[in-house]
Length: 86
Length: 296
Ligand SMILES: Cc1ncc(C[n+]2csc(CCOP(=O)(O)OP(=O)(O)O)c2C)c(N)n1
Ligand code: SF4
Ligand code: SF4
Ligand SMILES: [Mg+2]
Image 1 (cartoon, rainbow over the protein chains, first blue to last red):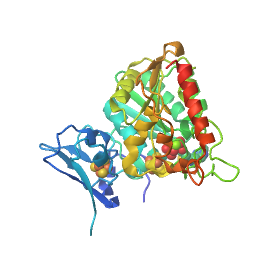
Image 2: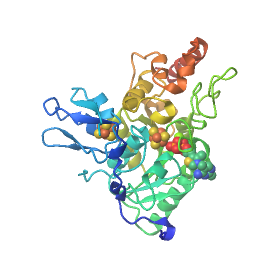
Image 3: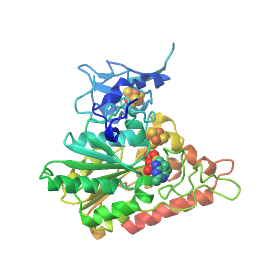
Image 4: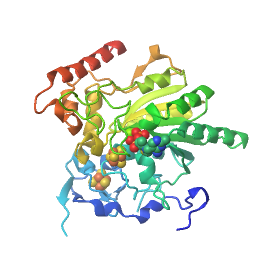
């Protein structure tokens, strides 16, 4: 690999090429009927893997690492962690 | 699809449920696009800049472990010389090792010279990136790989260095403490810090599930309990006037410190095989003393 001068990286946010979703052993599943769009989960996700959807919070499974913070912090129990199965 | 306001892109390799990642995400999104981030070596730097990739959507400079504050000072001076200093934030994200220990001299110099830089210490209370070694931010009684409890040891034997008070002693315009559970408080403080004309310092308690030994989903609860038990006090002070220190989150009903300690495996030797009432009592007494001193 050719290393740029000063190991400079030109492409901002290029880490999105790496999908951390594969790290997950549990998957957060949002219950649309329970989600009140308070966006607490969005605020607390360390990985910016939650989108403010039209009807409810939407998880980006490409990057969600399955930490469970969103499910734990949701005051309305609108997110459930379910085991990932192959 | 990622929101445009995310200046720390996903795909970075911080552990699942990392408090440092959340702190950085909150801070950089609050500071906005006209921000330059400087970072010494540590978890955040190695995991967000895996060459040839970067998770940053703002300019980011990695320097050595000891000199983030010097590099940030240089950016401040250079932009001034170029007449381009207006409307830009310079934000340092440093670990506790890079702040309390090896980065302290550079930081003190940056304060003394009066550079307009906001220095955020994401404190996970040990050298995590290199494998959980104790440092001067590690709390009394905590297990780390270099403060193992045993027959003759209760874990870390020294109290935590009061870094925010040390920063305030430099009489810089703004110093505050914050933690990730209290996002609005953190954001408000950061905005104040960025607005002052001179150095500012925010000490952020950033729990680390891997090093503190708790399940990743407990992240926010651990941060919250640190405040509710008085282990970590949320305050701010302007121009080093400690007599005008303002507590930003008052805790009328302080919880016993056990409630915080027992959430984390790094303190489990204080509960099993024998309950170390003496050590827990000592930790509680230190907190009580601190609150007395603060006049709370
Ligand atoms: C001069 C120097 N000494 C030691 C190291 C090895 N080193 C890299 S990161 C690190 C620990 C960082 O700890 P901290 O600043 O608390 O950040 P954390 O990883 O815990 O977030 C160490 C010891 C180094 N890079 N440079
Ligand atoms: S499980 Fe963790 S990483 Fe995934 S969406 Fe929830 S908070 Fe974000
Ligand atoms: S070791 Fe701790 S601080 Fe480092 S990335 Fe993992 S959770 Fe975050
Ligand atoms: Mg650290």
